Image 1 (cartoon, one colour):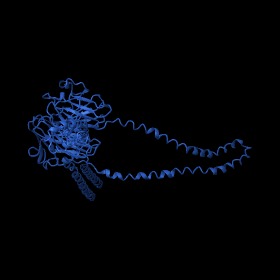
Image 2 (image 1 turned 180 degrees about the vertical axis):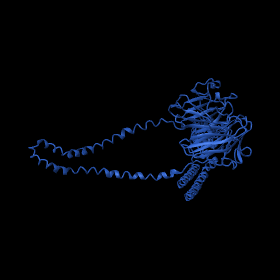
Image 3 (image 1 turned 120 degrees about the vertical axis):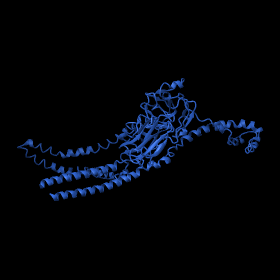
Image 4 (image 1 turned 90 degrees about the vertical axis):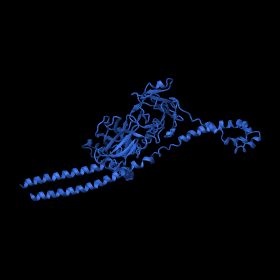
Length: 588
């Protein structure tokens, strides 16, 4: 009877311990892998969420999946819209984005989830890559359905992510989609790198013992004089060899210690000359391959026509133009061009220094430009990306190592530029003026009503406006031979119309001066002023950074508090477990 009671008490103890361990595991899992989103169920209105296009609002029952509220996004144009949050993440870690959506309108093309990864801390700059949900809602149902991206590994160099729920309308007819119970699960960033400075001084102790070891073998060969007197007793046994002469040669090789000392002397000079020649030949060949990589901005998207003159679906007639801004030929093999939804690998192409190349969707390009004779390649699937959106889209050019070389956005797409490039009319193109100008701003591009694939635009033509400046009138005062010129020049400056008779003479003398001195100066100054003002990056930062980047910090504090409460809860369970064990044993 006592044995059975002991057996039952042991089973009860194991059961209680299992419950404690399961509770502890779930608490730590929830603390380290909690939902990183703020207000995921929209119970606090739309706090923490932003929308790109459309109208975002809170809705109540019956249009909810759980809780009291959900979110709605309404679109009344044909462009893609989404709601999003920016979350700080750890590169190389696992994340999963999931949530529920209600799509029950045939005027909506699809609804899906997307994670966009960024190297910056605030979700701005150029997107590294993105991942979409495993399935998209394309059919219509009157209830909420779950979507998920599955477990994904964030890029190693990513520090933030924009999690989005995307609505793609068919047209400009007003449509509304509903979202609820969104979840972005994964490890929050940890401030561990602060402690990396402490191990730095530790390696300093390693070089100190090394010099102490090297001198110790040097004095060891000094016992050689002790070996010398040992050689003197060896001749003493030589008179005894009469019975055993063969044994006498055996003791003679015993003074082998002198040769042992001799190799020590030869070994010391050999290491000294050996290291000196080895480093010298290895260093010079290393810097030679360094100029091979292409830097950001070496190749630019100089012109793009995303809305050709053809009506309807015009993806087959779209094209863009690349410009090599370097003084060397660049191999574009395995390079790729991407828009919001698709990526295309470029065919093999060598782009000459200062040369242009057209990347076209297909041979339909020649329908609009039959006289084109420059370098051109066609993408394999017949459309650039997923077909460029006429209302707004972006283009990202990457090299064979996935490094971003150039990027732009236009229309209602501000993912690359804020503000984005202007939306041009059908049949026009966006083109850099002058060709190759790259300050990462929308002002680099102009609306070109006469697209020029394979050719770049020059500087703007307001240079003649500089001719009637007042500065050249002072210089010819000392140069003209006739003295009356100097008397008339200062007086007309307050009233230029009064000297009608002097119009013939100043025009002949002033016209050559501005043409030679002022003609090139505006062209030289206009170029550098654009290039030396790359001030795009700070402009978007203050507008949207403050809201999204503050979201992870309260979550981290909440997770720490949850861990502390969980530990306290574990101690309570452990106490209950011990009480149960004591009661069972007393009964036994």
